[in-house]
Image 1 (tube, one colour):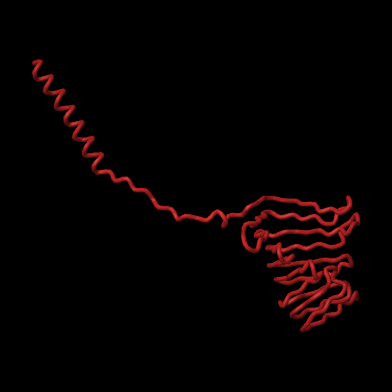
Image 2 (image 1 turned 120 degrees about the vertical axis):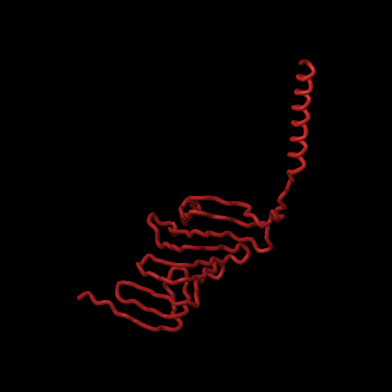
Length: 188
């Protein structure tokens, strides 16, 4: 009987060993190759739900807010992107905002000091003049805003529509290049 128990235990050990060898030989280790990425393609700075206040001599000049902000500083032409839109309120040293800008996408190119606003761009100045367009550029050095797209400007007296536009940032010295309609608003 002892011989049978020893043979039985040996048979279990041998079958366990054979099972382990079979299991290990049938498995293949696969290592997925991942595409290498360049760290420079990632933003150097990013933030969510940002609110930034710019001041000069203790007076608020503008307040900028955005759901997402990403800055790429390691590129040849650094820029900051607001891919989920932004809102800027301009104060010009005053207590109340003198203008505001809203868009669903924005990009600021550092070296050129150029803003590009896209998708449902709305600018309202101190006088209540409202500019609506799909794309607007703001050259900070030249103090000029412009577009070659369709624009609509509405104030209390009229609505003017056309293609192509340029103005100073306050919308006081503005020009629509190809006026397509002028609608006079009547109080009656």
